[in-house]
Image (cartoon, rainbow, N blue to C red; front, side, top):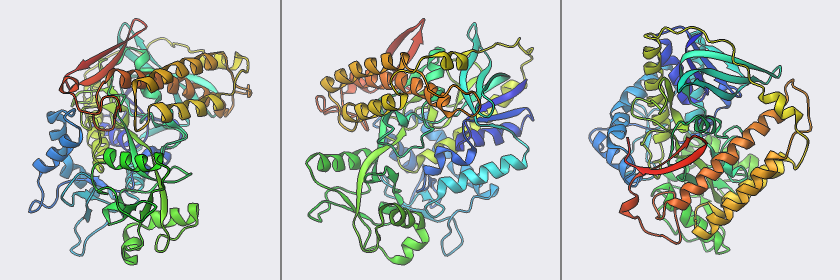
Length: 529
C-alpha cells in the first residue's frame, strides 16, 4: 500500500513526486516509457516568471494570461500560478536547473508571444529537457520508487471511492494491481488524436483522460487545442518560439511579413494556415540574426534544421507549417488539483485547472506543470497521512488476454492514421458544423473498425502492439468528445475557430464539461471553478 501513486513522469509528475516525498516515503511514480522521454522536453523556449519588477509585474503576468485565455481562465487559479512563479523558479534553480544567465549573473529572460515584457526564463533552447533531467536526478537522490514501462489500464474505483490502479507491465506482459491512499494523474495531453500533424511524442495519447472519463471523472474544454505556428514542413519537428523571440520573421513566397510574430499562437498559426490553404508557402527567416545569438541561445534549432532539412539558417529560408503542440482541455480540477472524485488529483497537461482557458500563453506551460505539480504532490501526501485503509483483495483485470484473443481485422495503425487525417481536415485550425458532422460519422466508422480489429503479435512479453491497441481506443474516445465539444461551442474563441460563427459570443464565456453518467456522455457549459 502506497500513500501516493503518481501516473506519469513528466515535469508535473516528477514535481509532484518530490513534493510528496517531503511528507511521506511511500511514493511511487509509474511511467509508460521513461522520465527523460516525457513530453516536457518539447518545451524548449522557456518558463515564465516576473523577475524584473521595474519593467514588469505579477499583475501584468496575470492580465496577459487571462487575456490569452479569452476570458475562460479563472482569476484565482491564474493568480496562484503567477504569484508562485518566483518561488517555482527559485526551487528549480536550487535543484540545479542550468538556467542561462545575463552578464550580471542573473537568470536571463526573453520575450515570448502575447507579452510586452521579457518574462521568460530559459536554458538556451533546451529548457524543458534541462528541467526534466534535473527533476529526475533529484528524484533518484531522494530514493523515489519508479516503475518504468508500465502502462495504465484502469482505475480501481468502488462505490465512487478510489482504491488503486491496474497497470500493464510491458517487460513481461503481466497485469498487476497497485493500491494507494491517493492518486495523482499526470499522464499528459491528447495531441496524438492528430498523430500525423503533431509535435508531440508518440506516447502522448490521452490515456489518463480517457480512463478517468470512463469512471465518471469530469473533463473540460476538450475543444481547445493549440497549434504551434512553427514546425518544420514535412516533419512536424518543433522550432521553438525562442526563434521568433530572438527576432526571426515569418514571410511568404514574396518575402513579405504578414503577421506580428509575437502575437498569441492561435492568431499566428491561423495566419500561416490561411496562406498555406491559398497555395502559398510560409518560411521562418533567421538569416538576419547575429550568429553569436544563435550559437548561444538557439543551438538546438540550428542543429535540427541542419540535420533534418539540410538547411543553413544563416543562409536559407526555413519552410514551416502549424502543428498540434498542446491541449488546453483535460481533467477538470480546482486550484488544489482535486478532481471530481475524492482522493484523485490531476496536474500538468492532463489537467484543466482553468489557467490556460481557450489559448495557452507561451512560457506558461512549464510554469503551470511545475507549480501545480508541487501543489498536487503536497496535498495528496497530506491527505494520505490522515487515512487508514486496509489493502483490498486483489482485483484482477483480464484486459490483455481479451486483446490477444481478438481476430485480426483492419490494421490499427491504418485506423490511427485515418483518424488523424480526419481530425486535422475537419477539426483543425478552422472548423464548421458541416465538417464536424462529417467527422463525427467518420469517428463512428473508425470505432466500429477498431472494435472488429486485433493485433497480429500474440506474444505477451514486450509486445508494444498491445500498448498501441489500448492507446488507439483512448484516442478514438477523446476524438469523439473533442468533435462533440467543438460542435456545441457555436462561437470562435482562442484556439477554437468556427468559420460559421466567427465572433466571440458572451453566452459561451463558460468552460465546457463532459461527464460519463451511467454510460451516457453529459455535456454542459459551466462557470470556471
